[in-house]
Image (cartoon, rainbow, N blue to C red):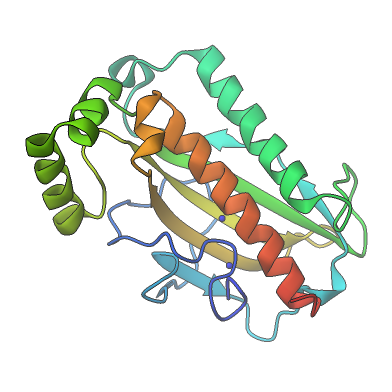
Length: 215
């Protein structure tokens, strides 16, 4: 969204697929990324010696969208992007709960998170329904999953994220990742993107718990 869990890709573990996105320009400069672990993010950078255990509160910037496919081509409306932004912030709030309060001002114990959605593959509910219900379609869908990392018609999302010290804006972690939706997420147009937000938010909680020895 991230060693992430610190060395194990905590925020985004388990959602890796072969890197296919080029930098969007969201990050102010791009560090020397390393390939993420086989079960983690696509590309990962962690500042040597960084320690997230000092951060007890979280400040989250408004989610941004750097979409490579035009909103017209994707059929995305401004209202849908606003809905996605709200979903992202709600997912963070629900995942962190009272353990890591969300705040709006920098502080010595405040971790700042910046995230941009850099590509959205909207779901195709008709295709997803076919590949889920019909045996022949399902066979096609499984074959696609085996070769590309995603099922037919379910969509997905790519993102760039960085963790910063809120007082100095020093970068602690940066990552680039692609999330492929589950079969069920394909039944709604933006289901896979919302699923990605919920997943990344939950992994953020795991990352912070690991850093604080809560797991």
